[in-house]
Length: 94
Image 1 (spheres, rainbow, N blue to C red):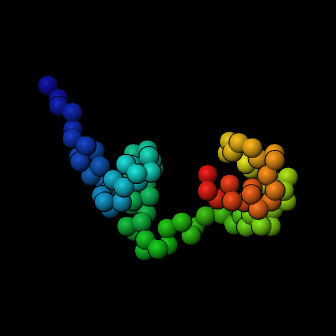
Image 2 (tube, rainbow, N blue to C red; image 1 turned 180 degrees about the vertical axis):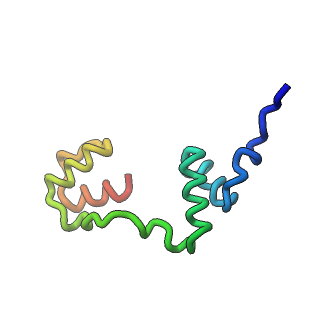
Image 3 (cartoon, one colour; image 1 turned 30 degrees about the vertical axis):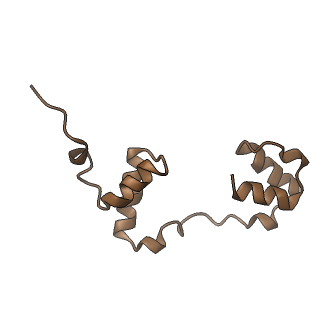
């Protein structure tokens, strides 16, 4: 009869176990995403992580309508009554 492998055997390809656990427990990432990020962070300098993202303009460069559209996308309540500064703050801290 075949036994289930332990969770440590399932993650044998994870290079940075500490980061993987933090991503899974504190950030709620899936096993696959946590392993992918942990392995990438191990391969590169950790400080390089998060710097590979897109080149979206700063919220200050967005119009109020664009900010409201984004607030609606991420389910921020009361966005229609907010001014630009309030929208930016809500988007950054949601």
